[in-house]
Image (cartoon, rainbow, N blue to C red; front, side, top):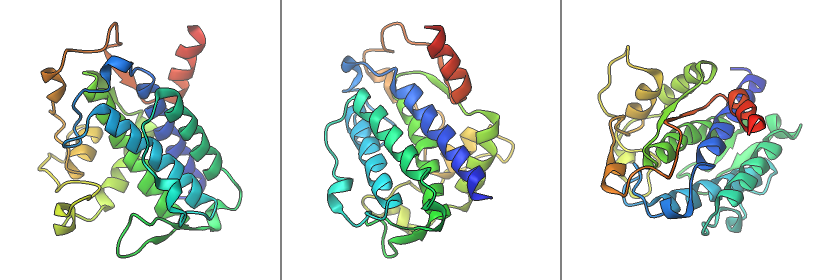
Length: 225
């Protein structure tokens, strides 16, 4: 995939995550998520830290461990971190840069396109994680679904997914003709049918019934408000 197309898809995935995180209220932070043992507060802190870390890596400073530090996060802090990683990835030197990602082992240096793909698929999945934690449906824009599925299909599935701290769990069975987002989730160890949110107090007050990963549609909606 040409890197400019990859960057456009990455931007769409990150903006989609911003739109769903914007629905989070303070009372929601204790909710369970599809990420085992993580509350929504834990997930939001992780997502924010990963934006900061990948932004540092895009700027040639991925080896600075402070950039990856996980701290308590807010919706505003998440939005700022997302804007920062998008700005970092848009810098003209990025396509030729090698990213240092110290959390990856045994290899921690990757070509830009591969690192961008890692971040893209992570935020496709985490956008769904946040939506499901809130009890919302979540949909991928058609232009993003196909490329994201191809990335998910390329993620190796093996014993390394059973190791502590693995990014994804072992792949689950899924039909080849299933919805692309459901295939992505299952390939990366998520059950598309996860309903752990039902054990909490219920959806956020007055939430929408679904989230839309089309950043153009979301921007239009924001302007309308």
